[in-house]
Length: 226
Image 1 (cartoon, rainbow, N blue to C red):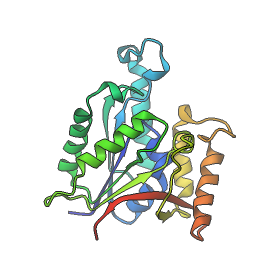
Image 2 (cartoon, one colour):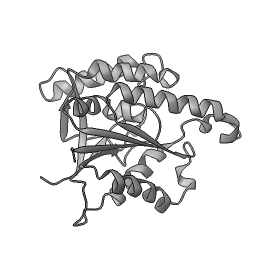
Image 3 (tube, one colour):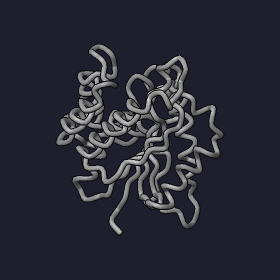
């Protein structure tokens, strides 16, 4: 079996914002990259929050996610359709079970996901669920769990600054990351909003400057076994 990586994101576009460059790099190096998106990403913008009324928009967003991930070289994208920005209405154990099922089926070596300090509560819940699902049991396939920051969420939680200790050089993959985000046109905002293409590039350049590279993505290692 080839080496495998699983990215677990709360919402469509989080995976690109958090580790799109690393995903493209790993795929180019022959690793099988998979993505699990837990939330549906739409209904929190509605007063009624009724997913049955947004069938068209939900399917369009799923199609967008597939195209963005395909551009990055992702093998397959999975969707769980948890209620957008209301993960706290779902028992944590149920979220853990979804992640556990995919980890058991795919047996990834690396897992990338949100850190627990994000302003967005869905991100924090996903972080806890992934850590629980990737417990270091003797038979576990997961050797590394990495937290990524997400613009317009991580940096807005001022009391919990993101402190990376692992960087991935994405100079050759920055344009792929930006192009994947262009596909998520409904999620993009105009500069100087942090969820803009210019902010994404500036972030990559800044992380790169931290380690003497032209562009990088930054992560915090939750656990790494070599």
